[in-house]
Structures are given as structure tokens and as C-alpha cells.
Length: 310
Image (tube, rainbow, N blue to C red; front, top):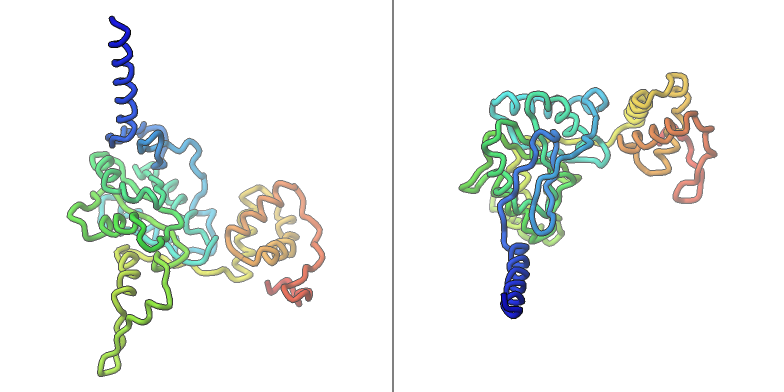
């Protein structure tokens, strides 16, 4: 073969390789038996479903002080895996109170009955229709999980999620639900100028303007709202004790950990379940109950009046 022709063929093959990297391609089927949880992510210009090799082992009984929230999500998920009607769910409220952990615990509870979880970042929500098509013929039941969901003005994923929840000519199949967590109910930033759109009627009624209606419309398309609230001191201590037991700490050490746990929360400015879990990991890792630290100063430089009222 003439050298000039060989050079031309090599350049053509290189050009085809570059074109293949930018031309949209069908998403490959993952190994569905490799895991009960998957991550939707982009690799070399293609979206793939990666099996999660080490799924969080949290169980429903590990989660304390969220019984009403647990009952609602458990009931909805039970309906879903049983083939009965169920709702998309938005879990909102205080940070570190167990929203994501509750979803993971439900996965572990129902994985044996065919429940599967697919975690999707908000930037990839524009691909929801393709993802739903991929799993539509599968026998399993899929929860599409969006953690810490919120949007800025104009983000594309907002419209895609809104249409998929309710309103698009193409809807999710019977084997797909969307579970999302967020620290705010309305998912979009609310600004003072939005209040200017409120209208007052002659009989004194107040009606929100279009900007406000748009910002609450997405959350309203979730059929089930589950709200989480900050923990009281006693609830925080109960959660701390539960996690200490989870890590195998002796009951005598758990009783002695009350004051260090309160100091730990005070230093972080939060009595969340996440803070309780972090304290328990620290204490279990050290193997002993640390001596109670000296009282730390508050923001005004004065020592706290009583750590039992953190």
C-alpha cells in the first residue's frame, strides 16, 4: 500500500475516533447482579451505571428518634416493592438528621425483594428520561436517589426533574420512583424580590405571584413530603448511645460518655444525628471515654452556663 494512502487511512481513523467520543451513544447495560446500588456517572464522554461495591450497611433499627419519618418512608417503599401505587418522596429539613441514611436503610430492608437504588447527581438529571428507559423493562424496582438536592436559577436539571415527576408526555414507569433529600422545602433559592409579585384582592386575600408559584411547583410534584426537625438534647444523647452500642462500646462507657458527647456537640454548634455518629466513631476508635474537657468559651468569650443545656 502506498505510504500516502496509509497516512490518509490513519488520519481518517483518528478522525473517526474523535467523532465517536462526542457523538451520543446508547448507555451500556450494567451488570445488574453486581450490586443492589448503582451510581450514574460520566466516563470518557459516556454515561454509565457503576455498581456500588460497598453499599452502606445501615439498618432501620440503627436510626433513632425519627420514628414518624421512618414509618412513612417504610410504608411507601413497601407499597412500591409490592407492586402497589406509591409516591415520589421529598425528604426535607434539618441537616444531619438522617434523611439520606433512612433511604439507604430502606434499600437494605427491601433489597431482597428486588429493590435497587440508582444515585444521580443533580447535574445529570437532564438524562432522567434515558435512565428511566434503560430500566423500564427490568423486573426489579428502582429508586432514583438525588441527595442534597437544590437548584440555582436556570439549571437544566430542574426542568427535567419537574417534567419527569409530573407533566411530561413521557412518565416514569411503574418500576421507578424518585427519592430526594434537601435542606430546604422549595428547592430553589427564594429572594426578597419574589415578594413583590404577591397580589392583594379587594376582599383582603393574598395570592402569590408567578415567581413564587414557580419555586414551589417542583416540590409540590413530589407526592409525599417527609419533614425532619432538629433534635433535642435528650434525643441527641439517645442517638449517641445507639451509635456507641453499634460500635460495641460497653454500657458503662456509654453512661460516662454523656458529658463528652455534649461538649462534642457544643464545639460543632449542632446536635444532629451526624454529629452523634461522628462522636461515637471517635470514642469507639479511642477505646475509652475521654476525660471531660474543660468548658469552652462561647462566642462572647464567656464559659457556657451548663453543658447539659447545649
